[in-house]
Length: 311
Image (cartoon, rainbow, N blue to C red; front, side, top):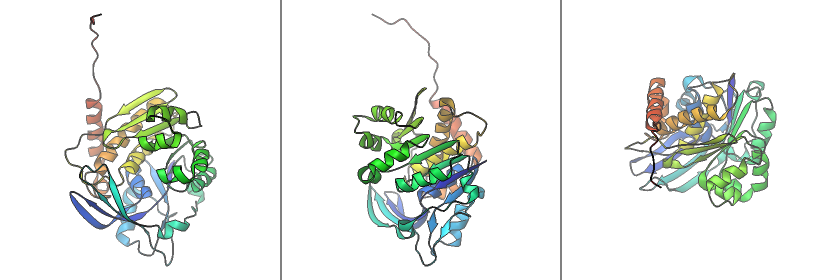
């Protein structure tokens, strides 16, 4: 089976307290694909310009990712973003956003991309997400991401799109903004009534939480003494999470499956932030992922010995 992702392919310029890169491969679809490629065959759909060089193509194709559906726009320039992270890495300031070829992006899916078993709709215009979802009608699991911009200016379209997917992945503040709920727990439970069978609340350095009709599961972020660049961490999480689901085509989508997928998503996100951009995940090995998942299991498991409590 296969996994299709639709989203941005970009060049980023990033400054953090630990250094800077003037031009590095980025974009939601890129980070997602690099993480998901550990689990299944990935087809990437997104536009690039003439400036997308051979090294970038090679990086995007790491672990056999299929780039046949990537649209190269003749005479165009690839989406470019420049930003700066401040001391605690929780906040960032955008200096430059050049949509370039991404501004007129109209996803074109091959028959192979449409026939995907699993689909991830990265952060793009909700109308486009819904259009792609309609073309992949047979996908057994569809997850999506979004952002505060679409919540503010395309809320009705976004809600309609959310109703047609299986899993919504947003950060906790975006969930609260979308629903106007007082906290992300109430927000996630409300969204479960809109159509999705699962909601994930990303909480940055604090981890992530999963909500389904069958339960709740929370996982902390993997503890790291050094975080270099958070760019792409959320998309790497999504890649690990959705990729794990894709790797189990014969298993019903259940709370238990999504819990296990959360662990792999958390592991992939933790590797992403250890270096700038895609640098760490490109060099990552499967043994490293397995070792980190084992550590996550050990640090989140405990034995309960009941005692008599005082009244």
